[in-house]
Length: 452
Image 1 (cartoon, rainbow, N blue to C red):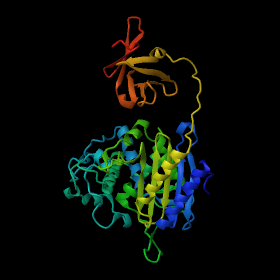
Image 2 (image 1 turned 135 degrees about the vertical axis):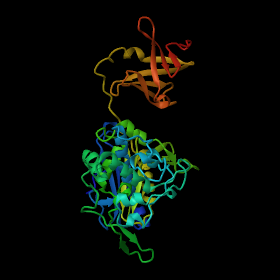
Image 3 (image 1 turned 60 degrees about the vertical axis):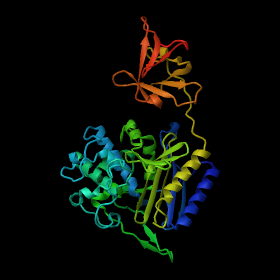
């Protein structure tokens, strides 16, 4: 049964109305949508905050499986980035290095991840989503130079075939099947017990709705074989919320936090006219005003799905419908609409302030306080929880803060804002007292009339 709502009554009323309207207009036998909070968001407990459902074929429930389609790609991408972190590959490796003898030339793994390789969208043959899948050897044998529709980085061109090849790379570098990697490296650590390669009861059957007499035609539930890394998997709403929570807040047991952040950096823009949609390393990115949402949509014959999160707040939306009568883009659009509604209407959780256990170790206290650069004031504070120096340009809020943390070599390295990646060097007088902060050659002093 759906959980009790953790949202305001007016927010849930509006969400329920939008879901009912979308189900009716899209003629979906069933539609279910959940709003979630990632476990780490402002110290709050994670999980589903509200579930809205409509339709009766079957009666939607957070434990019922639907097919997630291309949301599968986010899992394939996480696995590939993890292998990069473990030193088994490099994102700039040519495909040839891991699949020798293929005819695609110097196509890079990074380009395939971001749909920037120019590779055609589908493999040859019958429509793979509705047909019994071939094995990897057959898929690779069908590759030709003509599969490259564009030169690399000429344009964004979505490719299911690209993710089949990335799945093949995973199998070659690890010696394990793609599905075994998904289960052991992703699902088990995240407790996703209702995500599977093939459907397990209870699951929703997928349909096409007849345009004239509104009857249902049940769609086949295929094993897509070598194309599985592009869209095979099934999941319940509860499990998809767990995955979306991971995309929002991360889990170091699954992937390093900085690597998850790297996945959400655009590789290509999907709409050059408005710059509202892009693609990172396996993650769709959508801009709505001042917010950027990360996630992915999914579709397979008889199913559409969505997972979208606002990473700064940890709030996300996941959903399913079991009919192609609901246009493929409608459910992701509904998800982002609901996500914006929640972010606008709901008060953000507030992390309670707690006093520090003691003064900062070493000479950190000597770095805090007021500093100036070119007549402008900056305040440096210590965040004991994150163990970071926080530089706030004055007045606060004018531009984002800069955060610095010691790296493995003991240097202060920027982690956010315009100085992310830059080094902060402390200049000292003969007594060892800090007299200036040198941030990428910009020198900050204790007095506005000194230049370092």
